[in-house]
Image (tube, rainbow, N blue to C red):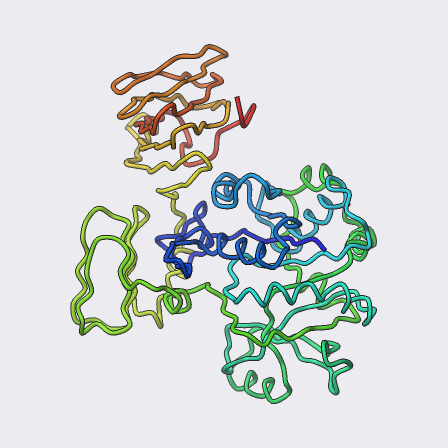
Length: 446
């Protein structure tokens, strides 16, 4: 069996800590039993490893998140990079083509699709081992995983099983209901409906046949050539809701979708992360502060306060999800990014009277790490080493830079930076459309 982790999205409900680059799955807000902070994607990879599934896992993510994904999961997991965000159907289709073409997966092998923001016990992942047998015995094209609702919620999709159940281990699915109102949800619970965990399994052959029958490509190059023109589509609507037969297994343990501050803080060990304090009479209040300034919270209960260079959120946990509506009204440049080699933070961004844009970044590289060998076509860079030593390659020539040294990199010049010691730079960018990506990578390692 192969596991495909879907790791896209920006997690806008967890703004300002999450943005289009550092989405919610990369926030180190959870705590292991050993007291170590970990992110959602680190937790799910650890649990997949405990269940013996990590070695057969690959990840699908947007190309802008490929570097941060590599930083968090290491070098041994294949990462499939999407040039544009086009929904779960296209992500799964690209993954199926990748497994078929690049990894030469057997067409009869079971493919299991998982969201990367699921919070469950390791027993959840051990249950996935049953998918191949369930698909074989039921002769279904698709198998899903659901869990028993703990309350009539309007935030989840519901799987309605056909009764009586065909087997003690699985049930054939009668229909799907997406985020019903509370009254309908209560009625569905009486029909033994399950919350949809967003987990799908199918034989690779089924997906390849489906793509061919619908006129979709099955080769990676054909997908990538037309990605920008593809409509956004969900796997649920395109495939699951149009396929028969479909079966579902039930997971009996705890399951949570960590997509909101209300859900996430319920699994955080520490009430305060970063500079600041919460008074004793502030019940069920959490503070996460990435700024170098303390935040004091006094006499306020049920509050989430989150601060980063992207902004500051102060909201009741019950209504914090409304930030997603606010963010939809205006686009925002991610002010902080994590890379496989370190991090960068935008210190200032502006435009002069002539229309020339200027961006100043603080860039940090870990010792021994390097950027790719790359080129910017429409912007020039001025690098100033603040601390540490660096090796720079510029148009095939290598230079050694130390604290205080300055280097100008013209637009169109191929270059890369390697940290000999822990390195901090100030990078000044000059050119048009600095908020847009302008990079061609020539080599990841050099």
